[in-house]
Length: 113
Length: 111
Image 1 (cartoon, rainbow over the protein chains, first blue to last red):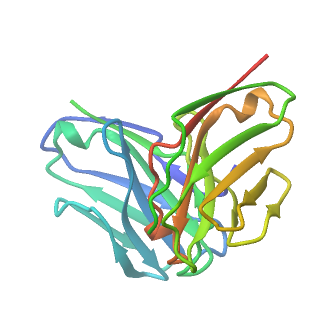
Image 2: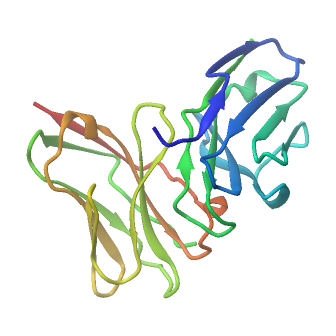
């Protein structure tokens, strides 16, 4: 158990819909990262927040957005969903802004039908 | 970040040492070598990292060649639970936001 909690574990939704994925980082960790893992793309970094502020952006689509709240939990919002958005979405956390030892949650498996 | 090359798959008998190679011939002086693993669609798990010297922790040992162009992750006594995809990453930014997970090595530990 990494200490990072993601909910829900599984999500099935229709194209065009909007979903919210939630992540609670390890106690004391200020950075939260979101990654997407699809069959054809591998594990790709989406976005990082540190203590409530956006710190780095990767290959995140404009239809996707995220935020980190004062209690440090984070949410990833995916809208206008397409079939190709079906993937595993992982959240990771680390103590500071610059830590490569990140602790990953168990992921949310999103299926868009 | 330097590109890393790993064999796509390896087998290892349970109880034996698993030696997973990684080539990073273009690594620069400030880039660390990190190893993560992913057990069947679970979240990736940090294993170990190093810059120049060999490193050991409770999970594994990391041997980096003197020229730093390659490294080997050693699981000293592999168990069935070590069956996973192992990722070797060269990174100089010191942040998990820059981790680039390639295709890794799928290690199959067998009885």
